[in-house]
Image 1 (cartoon, helix red, strand yellow):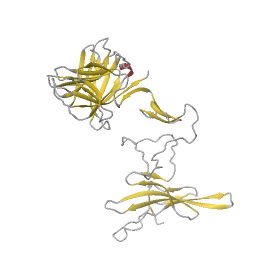
Image 2 (image 1 turned 60 degrees about the vertical axis):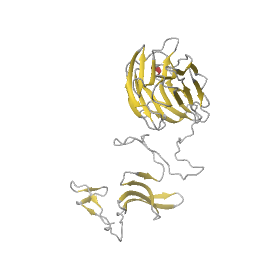
Image 3 (image 1 turned 120 degrees about the horizontal axis):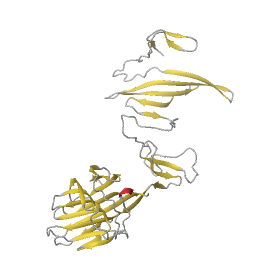
Image 4 (image 1 turned 30 degrees about the vertical axis):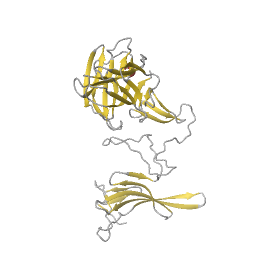
Amino acid sequence: MGYTVDNLWKDDGTNLSPGVDYRNIFSPKLGTADVGTTTYNSPDMILQASAWDTDGSEDTWQWKWRVTPASAASTSSSLQLYVQKNAGVDASQFSFSSSGNMQGSGTITSYTGSFAVGASNTSLTIYGRETDDATAVAVKIGNAATLTSPLGKVTSFCTDAGITEVAHVNRNGEFRNYRTQFLDEFWNGVVSYWITRTSTGSVAAQSSSNGIYRLTTGAADNNEESIDWNDICPFQNTLRPSFHVRLKLDLASNIQVRIGLTESTGVGTDDFICFRINSDTDTNWYLVTSDGGAETTDVGPAATTGTVDFKWEFMSDTSIEWLYSTDGGFSWTSQGTISTNVPTEQLQPFAEVIVRNNGGARYLELDKIEIFQDRI
């Protein structure tokens, strides 16, 4: 291997160190690439060791650092770490690419127990390179020791750097979280909690669209079609219920729609959290909170006749952020936050559609309602 040293180096029998304050060892390229020879690897930096094999022979090991470039419209290179045993074939064990990628041929172990994304990045992506077939498994997650304890967890999901767990998969493959869930996909109707509160038209599952429940008003002014949980009110601000609905309107004119959580009709009608449109005012959706009749509103997107998703999340006992999606809930846009007039009453789910100004029958289609809430 050819090399130059930018200062005199001295060997004291144990260490090789610079004579003065210059620290670079420079190993020049083995040639200058051109159209005929498009790449030249760097010389190898070799570390050699010897081990006695108990079968009665000596093994010579060599580890080699080598830079391997690639010719292309935009060239690249990688720093390769090879291992060789007894003058055999070099086997690449590890590499760092000029684009910042790292690859290893075996298991990568963290002695600190953590792998973290650098400060200049925002997320960690894990993916496999399996061939697509019936036995393909892209990513496996497990534990070196077989988990047999009833309390064993295969994975733990946290909201921070591995401290605050919000869900886990236990050793039996069961997913567990710390929030209760209600879900209605409206398959062939509604689940048994719902009742029709007010009817001037009809409520019906759509025979041609499994998972759609349509509330249709009568044609006269203020005709209403509404459903709720018959005054079963398990949701409360201190348990921070999140609410997600997928819905569709037939028209955005001469219509009022509210959907969310409201108090028992036996108590009153002025404590609620809901998504609302009232075309008498404008054709935008709003998040509305009402505590004893004192309302706070936050304006959101213009109403359309397409299928859309809305959801809200409690950020604290008295603060709610709401979000909007047009792609089935895969991506969301925050619409704002309300931190006043959040009701403290116990609430029930409800949905209502009202025709305005004798505009003719209007309908609201519900595709999905999903509610999560803390258990304690």
